[in-house]
Amino acid sequence: MKKLIFGSALLIFGFGSLKAQFRTIDQSTVQEGEFGFSVGGAHYFGDLNPKLRVNRPKPALGVFFRKQFGNYVALRVNAHFAQLGYSDIYNSYNQFMHERNLSFNTNIWELTLQGDFNFFKFVPGDIDHAFTPYLTVGVGTFYYNPYAYYQGQKVYLRQLGTEGQGSALYPGRRAYGDMAVCFPVGVGFKYNINARTNLGFEIVYRFTTTDYIDDVSKTYAGAAAFPNLPNGQPSLAGILQDRSYVYGTPIGIAGRQRGYSNQNDSYVTAEIMLSFTLTSYRCPKTKY
Image (cartoon, rainbow, N blue to C red):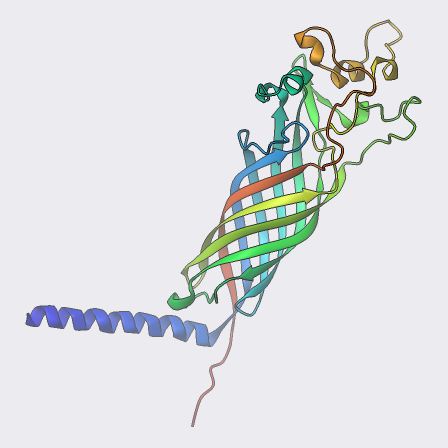
C-alpha cells in the first residue's frame, strides 16, 4: 500500500510538472503560425458526374502557411496540386450518359487564401488546449487543361473546340480559358502532438466559376461544325466531340444536350495534414 501511495504521488507530481512545463513554454513563446504539408485524395463533380458520386478519387498534394491571429482565427495561404478525371463508362445507371461515352483527365494547380476559424481555443504546448475542429473558407485561382486519350495518345481538348467554340456556326461560343476562380469551403480538425508539431485532417469542397473542367457544358455542335480534313478524313475535334459511335449510331445531333450548363463543375479534397509551429520568444513578466 505504501508503494502504491508513493507511486501515485510520483505520478501526480510528474503530471503536474509536465503541465507546468507546457504552460511555461506557452508563457515564454508566442505562436506565430504554422508551415505544413498535406497529402490525400481529390474528386471531381460535374457534367460527367452530376450525382456527386465519390468513386474515382485521384491524388492530391499541398503545402501551406498558416498565420495565427490569437487562438481562434488564422489566415492561410495554400498551394495544391491535384488530379481530376471521370468517364461515362461509370454511368451505367443512365443510358444516355453511358452512350455519350465522354471522358477527361486534368491536372489542377491551385493557389488559395483561406480563413480558419477554430471551435476551441488552440494553444500549441498546452495539453489543455491541444485539439480543435475548425471551419475554413476562402477564395483562390486554379489552372486546368482537360485531356482525353484517343488511340493511346493524349489529346488536349480545349484547343479543339469540341462544343463548336471558334466555329462560324456558333459565334457566341468562345474558347474557355485555362484559369478559373474557386471558393473553398471545408471543415477539419487538428491536434497538437507536441509544442512544435501538429497533425490534422481536412475536407474542403471547391465551388468554381467554370463548367469546363471536364470540357463538357452545353449542347452538341453537330458534325457540320467540324469539317473533314483536306484528305477527307474526319478531324480530331469531330471524332472527340461525339464518341457515342462506339455503341452504334452517334447521338451528337446539333442542339442535343451534351452537358448541364446551369451548374458549374466542382471538386473536393480530403487530406491528412502535418504542420510545424513557428514561434517567437516573449520575455515573461517578473514580479518584484
